[in-house]
Image 1 (cartoon, rainbow, N blue to C red):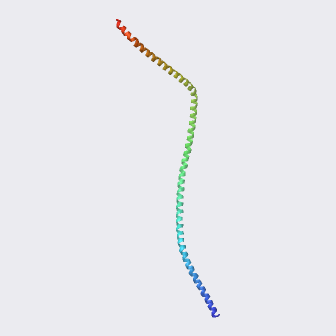
Image 2 (image 1 turned 120 degrees about the horizontal axis):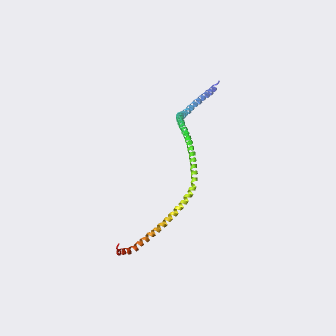
Image 3 (image 1 turned 120 degrees about the vertical axis):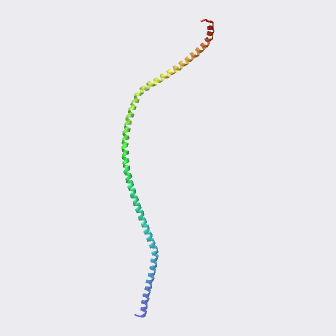
Length: 167
């Protein structure tokens, strides 16, 4: 091997070492840049994951309490619905009884219709009596006026005659 070949090999080896050193420096600077991005991002991701777990845990707990509450309320509602059904049965029975009573009243009112006709004729008779009583009242008032006049007309001469009579 000649010196020139040795220098070329040495130059190549030197250049590879420089390239490897440069690559190592670039990689380290790139890794530092990535560390500035990745570690805070990783920390933020961990914080958000813990917070997400906390929210999901609380949501699960709230849903559990909600399910217990709904179950309790549904039990109460079922009991109340049974009471409503029972009361509706009683209401139906009462309405049927009222229907029977109203049918009975309807039949009784039906028997009152002939009486209504008689009452109508009685009403007309009473009106006629009222009219005749009014006519009699007018006639008696006329008699009253006539009697007053007669008393007045005959009273003066009779007083004079009474003064002449001895008894």
